[in-house]
Image (cartoon, rainbow, N blue to C red):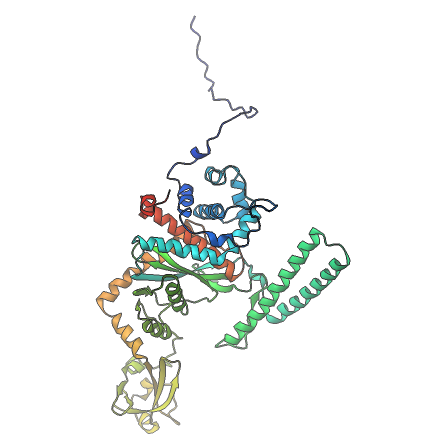
Length: 497
């Protein structure tokens, strides 16, 4: 007799109490074209000897073996490519993530080792970045014919509440020094234990940070150009960071990350970190760094209006580099004091033969003052005769708030360096405008990539030097990802593997 089927669903059972004895082929954990394998193979063809300085574990001596720099570099680049910036998270994933298991050979690297390595070799890391760019330059991927620079703000590892004024920082510094002296005395009287040594290191670090914060406040106060009575502040945990405006318009402690991108294939050729909130002083140092790294200046550099001030235009011109960029007139917009638009300063004409300004009514204004704002900009003030202005029928349109009892209408004329004038004229040409249109897709793409794909939105370490190292890791990761995409046959081209 045929048995009727049950209506109850049947599922695959899961038995988590069973034990497996499994053979693992480490080489089979990741495919041949996996990013981790590509990173490892490429690093095998570059000079990493600079990372070996200071290693105490040598052949013939006692002690534990050190981790190979090639492995630690590969781990960090792979971690950055996956948006992981935490050394503790990397240590955890070494136990189960296939690519990290392949890199380490099923070993786990301690997070202290990873964290220290990330920032302990800043100069060696920069040399590695330059060497990788040099390899790409040798194979035509980088040309330095046209580069584009852009900056982005990345949040610092500091809380807003850590910022304080000079008096509060000085009080904290005195307290920190008292605590440090008491701790050192206690350690001298007793046998130094590991916990006490750790407390001593922490106390010394705290004292150094507060001392640096006090110095930073003094530096900022001395450099203020306006509102000098308002006291400056600095962070007691990261004295190098500054409040900066983010993309959402808010202010937060951060650093100004500068990337120079080669226009040929969108590869980053220069990376720097600054504690200056604006970009106006960042172009010339970036060009100087390129000259040191590659022995030549780029033929052309394209930037936005944040970089194009008179000093920068003149400095870049002296280097023989063609500058392309938009121009934005700086300075606060002055109130018109009720002046009719027909009598604005722009409607006053300059008579070069007599060095006078002529108003719309034909009256002449003579020179009164001449100020030198900078090496490249001068401002000349012209003023009309009181008799001319007081008898003018248009005086209420020309200068309604002037009683005309002491003086007449005043206007100013700016004289800029001929280099700046030539730059402005060049930017009116169609060729320059077309070149500038290419800036955003090239210059802003690496910044967007490292923030979104690499999750580089906040620094993990503190201090300008360590922040520069972090930014270099991100730029190096971006370049290698681009290299593997632009040159699929990179192993054959670079003779690696």
